[in-house]
Image 1 (cartoon, rainbow, N blue to C red):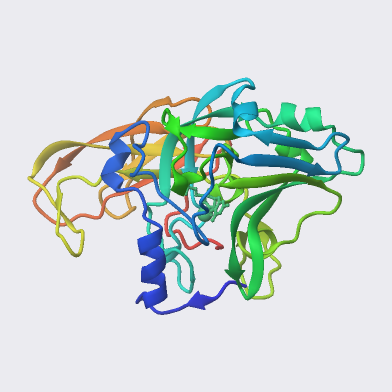
Image 2: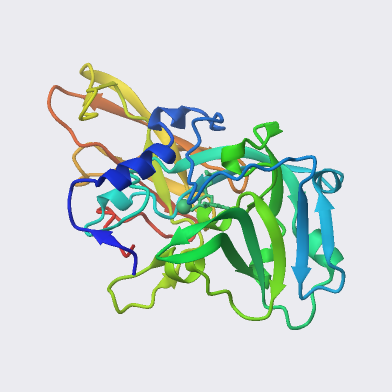
Length: 339
Ligand SMILES: Nc1nc2c(c(=O)[nH]1)N[C@H]1C(S)=C(S)[C@@H](COP(=O)(O)O)O[C@H]1N2
Ligand SMILES: [Mo]
C-alpha cells in the first residue's frame, strides 16, 4: 500500500514534489502537439547527467548476442516519428480521498509530444531472446529510495508487450534532442500505456526469466481497492477528456469568469484502448449531458480534439466533460474509482 493522506491539505513534501514535477497548463490543450516545457514531468529521483557522446545502452540478460549501443548506433537504425499522448497513472490522485502521497496531480499530468526514435522489436530480435526469457526489464540511470528500498527506476514489460511494433526508443522530442528532464539521451516510449512504463534515461534493457517484482512495478502503479487487495497493475490509459478552461481565472481559486453569451468549449480526449469515440459535455455538474463534436485523432496514439457550443446565461455553473472509447469504456463521473 502506498503512504496515504486523508487530509484535504497538502504537506510540505507534496508541495515540493509538485514544484519538481509540473503539470501541463490546461490552456495548453489548444496545441495538438504540446510544446516542450508545457508537457508534464514526472521525475521520481534526480535527473541524471549523461553525456550523449559517451552514452551506451546495454541489451543484456537472456539474449544470444548481448549488445552495447551508442547513441549514434541507435540513430543510424530505422527512424520513426510518432505523436504519443502521455498521461501519468497518478493523474487526478488529488481528487481521491484518501489519496496516495505522491506528485499531487489534479488533472494536469498530460501532454502529447511528437517523439522520434527507433522501434524496440528489431533490437530485441538482433540480440536474440532466449527461450526462457519471459519479460524485458528496462532500467533507468536514476537511483533513489522509495518505501525504504534503494533501487534504480525500473519497469518491465511482458515479451508480448515489449514486442508490440509501436514500442520504441526515443531520442528526440518535438524535433529536438530529448531535454534532460524528459530522459536525455534515450528513453523508452510505450504508446497507449500510462507514463510509468516509458522509462527515461535508459541504462539497460535486460531479458529476464521471472516476472519483475521491483518497487515501481509491484508496489507502485497498482489499482487497489483496500489494504488487503493485492492490486491490479496499471497498464493502458482509461478514456479521459479535458477542456480548455473557458474565460478568465481568479488567481488563487482558479474559478473562471466569462461573459454571458454563446461560446465554444473545446478540449482533447484520448484512451489507450483505441481513440476516444464519443465526448459529452455537461454545464450542470453532470446531470444533463450533450454530445460534443469530435475531431480526428492525431495518429493512432495521439489525442483527439473536441468542441461543443454552449449558451452561457448569467449564473454559476460546473462544467464537465467525459469520454467514451472504441471499447465502450466510459469515464466515471466522480473519479473515485480504485486508485
Ligand atoms: N527513469 C525514469 N523513468 C521514468 C520516470 C522516472 O522517474 N525515472 N517516471 C515515469 C513516470 S511515472 C511518468 S508518468 C513518465 C513521465 O514522463 P515525462 O516526465 O517525460 O512526462 O516517465 C516515466 N519514466
Ligand atoms: Mo507517472
